[in-house]
Structure formats: C-alpha cells, structure tokens
Image (cartoon, rainbow, N blue to C red):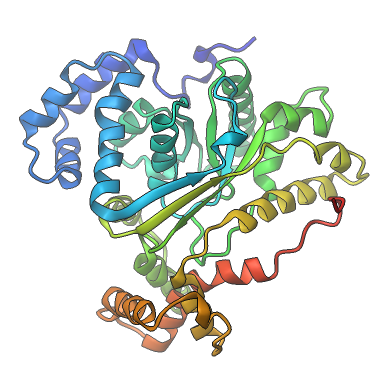
Length: 388
C-alpha cells in the first residue's frame, strides 16, 4: 500500500507543509514580483497579508489561486462557460484528459469552474522543465500540482514513468483526488489536438494483473475540450513554429516558457469554453477484445480525440481562419464582416512587428485557428463504436 512519502519527489504539498512553504514564498522577491505582475496595484504588504493566515492547501487555493484565476477571468476574458458537469459525480474522482493550449490556464480555469460549481479541484500534472526556479516549484506544488519528469535519460524515464503511473493510480483511488493531465507532452502549437499513445502506455505501467479494460475503467477517464476565442499565446506559438522551420539550431529556453506562462495569463482570450465529456468506460470492453496491444492504445487515443474534437467549441475566428487558409467562403454564414475585420486586426497586431516572411507567419497563425475546424470536418466515429 502506497503512502504520500513514497512520492515525495513528485507529489503536491499537503496541509502539514503549507505554513513552511508560504513562509518561503513571501520571502522570495521573484514571487512577489510575479504576483504583482498578475495583480497590478497590489503592494508586497497586501500580498503577504493575503497569505498570512493560510494553513491548508484548500485555504491557499481559495485565498490566492481562485482569486488569481478570477482576476484573470474578469480582466482578460469575455466570460467562461462550462458544459457537461452533469456527467460527473461530485463524490467521485476522475482522470481529466484535456487538450492543451496554455501552460497554466487550461487546468487553472477548469479548477475555478469546478470550485465554483461545488466540485473539488483537481491535482495537476506539470512538466519539470517548467520548474525553472525553486519558488515556482513551491508555488505549483502548493497549488496541488505533481511533477512529470522531463529531459531525463531513457533509464531514468522508465523509473519516473512507473512512479508517475503509480502516483496517478494512488491519487485517484486512495486519496480520492481527481487529476488533470494534458493529452500530450507540451502544448498544442498548431491547433491540431491529438492524444499521445505514449501517455496511455505510461498510465498503464502500474496495471499489475489487471486487464486493459479493467485498469482504464479504474482510472475513470473524462475527456475535456477547452477552447479559447483568442489563443492566449497565438503569436508566441507562431514565432516558435516559424523559427523551427527556418533555423535548425533553434531551441526554446526556460525563460521562453516562463514568458509564455506570464503572457498566457495577461493576454486577451475573448470567450472561453469547457466541455466535460462522459467518463470513458462503455467502449473499453470492446477495445479489450482487440488482439494487438498497439491497436488497443490507438483505439483509446482515437476515442479520446473523437470526444475532444466533437466537443471543441468553434468560434467565428476558427471559421474565418479556415476560409482564408482554404480560399473559400464555405463558412461565411458563421461570422460577420465585422468579426472578420476584428480578427485580421488581431492577427496584424500580434505578428506585424516580427521579423521574417510575413506571408508564412500569417499562414502559421491562421492554421492555429483553422485546424480545429478541419478536425471537426474530418470527424469520424471510430469504427469500433457501434451505431446507435
């Protein structure tokens, strides 16, 4: 039987550690500057005071994280909607597998919506490559994040993957805590959301004697689709993809990731929508009958993708970008000329000052928004799902 101490290297902090960790954070000038960037007008004294009486993780989330997320919602969005909460039992724990568009916000905003609707917040998977300073590690682990090891050797990866698989099973079924994890390593840069089969293989590393269907039923996978009217880091993603195309030596730095985290929180997002899918269980027995394990992982990944692509909220910007990329007016009834003009001005504002081939930069930018429409048009129910 596992306990928290078996996962000290990766687990979130628990209530007994909160006071010590907050004491470290409020002495860290970099954390204070970070908080002041997100809460303009807040003095150091105000930040310290808001955290001074916090003694539990739940209090920290209520006093800091939820307030921060609500501040982001109020100042950088036109509102958030969520559908599908009736698919969940508040007394049950789930493994939320989500498309991944923003480093911090995808899980943070989902947690606010869960919190506001009477559900417990999730524990959050975060890559070790993002924990570039000790205070960042303290902050995210205080906010119920657990660490996914990145950039390690093959031997270390095997060990860390087994530990991660065990922790997720332990969190779901012993701690009764829900988990949020992205469907792939790193954010989707081009708008084409796909579940990595390697993620599913990692999840099953602690399956023991359980069959494929038994194990994944115990994980209670819930596909989650999140869509932003304006991608928080659309310009940064465009530049990164362009540099990868034009400079073989290009490589992101930890500072780039930190900048993406901050810009994602402060940039405009327009409307934001979540759709919570039904827990995946009914098709697992069908998948179990497949003889080749590779087919099983592919089938489960296809099923998760099908649910996410089907539930993804398409905004006028998505249709505008698709029509421009494909030189068509197929979706002209989905937007107005005013909406098209606003979107093109948004794109010009974001990339006009960048260096490079402006036509290619524009193409990459537009494809980020167009690909979700392409995925919806190509949406095909996996052939192992029977017609109703």
